[in-house]
Length: 259
Image 1: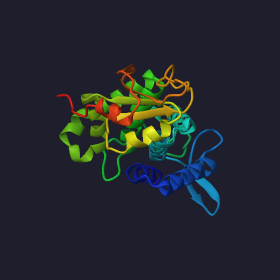
Image 2: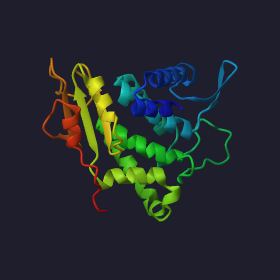
Image 3: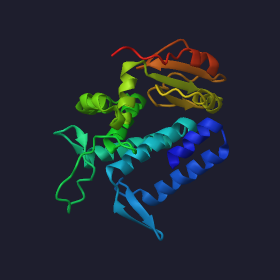
Image 4: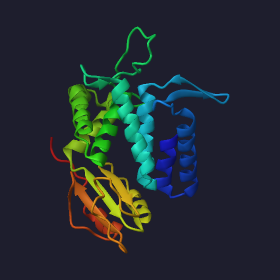
């Protein structure tokens, strides 16, 4: 629901959708986040209960990343990273290089399974791999990047053979076939510029921005007082900076390379 509100806000530019997204996100942080950094799955009659499963972490991280890209509030980005690191500590399997569906804190389980096939709802490992791909770009984190591509390689042959059950995996694969763009916006009008950039559907991009100086890797040394500058980059290598969203969008090529 949270990501649905964010998507609706990007598509229709109605503040009510963003207001509901933020209300939902703050509720989840205030009620479902445990003291140890983990999540609860259930909330009923004013009480949170049941340890969250991997799908809960994966979808929440995904939603927080989307929320960051419309608000530019770095708290959502850093919370996504913290939840991801928790998943590495409690769900990751060094043997298969995938994530278990259940946490290692669930001691009463006889067997811990690993989901890999997408269905009507994408499976948790596919969502996590996409999250790691994005976070790897946001934080220049090689572990995230390598884990994402390893997870994809684990299922690539099967995904290519059964595309109907691998939509989320193939979405990630497409980011490796074509150029993936990091659009960095720095300056007082960053939020308005980002809103304009988010309007068209461009799946092979992420947005990072700030109205002031930021220590995020993609924004370092890009702030210029009195101006709003847009950088279109690929793996940190940026094209010439521009000052309008239209010019930035012209720098994006959505065509795929041949495998």
